[in-house]
Image 1: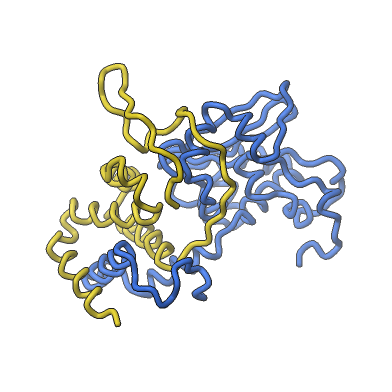
Image 2: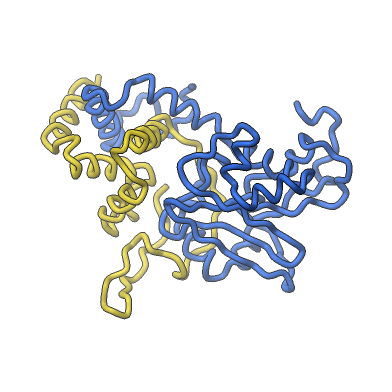
Length: 212
Length: 116
């Protein structure tokens, strides 16, 4: 892992809470609660998680209706089918249709399907999104540049510690015959949160080496 | 990230119970700024500790949240996201008796003392 993650100058003294992190971690390691390797492995796994995982599930669901039915029925089993560890909490996949759009929020904190999408973006954890997503969701979508048609119903799902959500966006038109790998490139993190549709294939441009 | 706007007015449920500073659903709020925040290593480590403690049965997600909420309204104004997590993890470990406040205080002094 590089130091480029640090927004704190490398030669600045640690902040109080950075010291607390070091202190707590060292005490817990001294008590054999976990080892330095355990911490390193978790950090590496976290860095490796991204919305690409959720995108693979969506692409499979778009091409395989039976898989989609299983995914909607039990997302953990659907993920496990693709070799994706389902994580410790329930995940419900909410399907967008021509008449219903879904978006997710955690008004109380920052619950998020981290195994499928990686860590949540800063705005998902911020008060502005959390407070307003359940009060004026269409205005929030507009701020993301997403003008949802008035005749499409909008459902906002408020996550809890043990119950998380992921959105299954609509498959864009003009993608007939695309492979799963190509389709997955259209599925952005924001489309899995429900603050954007999947990418327009015209905007992306179809690349024959989509796996690259 | 620190919140950039003024904290909301204190609210109460109809039975008079105060609504916590964390309970923001439905409050008016500012425009959503689409900020993306690259994580620092120490933030990943805080998160890793949460996962490891949970996996060992020493922490539950709602327990972490309860301790974050217990930091009070000031925590939302003055602390960053993973600072709240870090303080809440320490509080949870002290609450469960895994770590004592004395141990943590001594170790904090030791960590500070060995800085160049």
